[in-house]
Length: 251
Image 1 (cartoon, helix red, strand yellow):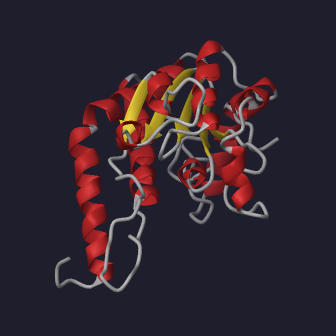
Image 2 (cartoon, rainbow, N blue to C red; image 1 turned 90 degrees about the vertical axis):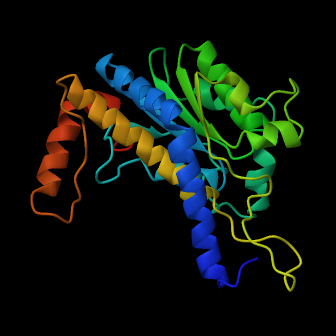
Image 3 (cartoon, rainbow, N blue to C red; image 1 turned 45 degrees about the vertical axis):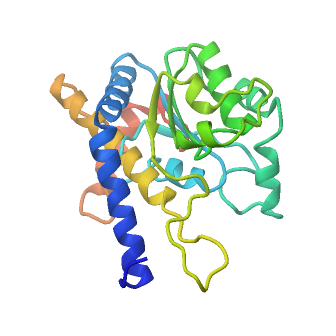
């Protein structure tokens, strides 16, 4: 490691990763944003899903100032966030075969919608089956994952496949297996994960691309404003009234 303190080393590592995804994933980000714009224009709905800490990046684009009002969270009880007790239950549920099918059967997802699935490893049954089953319904799937896991780990799904194998578009976060950027001789394991920083940046880059793509087509992007700026609540009310049939977090 360099002489820089751990805080600076971590920020440098995160910046390096952000530069990589900016340069290496530019075409995929453009394609993903275009897919979202196509879905909006076509009357479809937008959904995001992530389990455990991957859910943080999904939640970050839902009901978010400056974000697309049509992005909805596809929630799976027990795996969204770390509020379930014990927290290890969420990790266990990710490996349960058939859970994704049950979730989709009771969700509003339908043909013509778009679903963003976030899974760092992409190896567990839940994200793999979520992608497989969603595409079978006619839903377009964008996967946000670390492709490195597919070559350095084994899938936990019976098919032996990973999330990346069942997506229309894949955004590679470039996160190394283990999700820890720093090491020290005095610390027994690698530490300082950067996946949330990078994945959230990919999500925001994708939605920003979608907003610009809609504007380029002469369609006003259905964006939300902060409720802490004058007129924000009124603006959001108008957006939600216009697109209320495609917004599920307000019902």
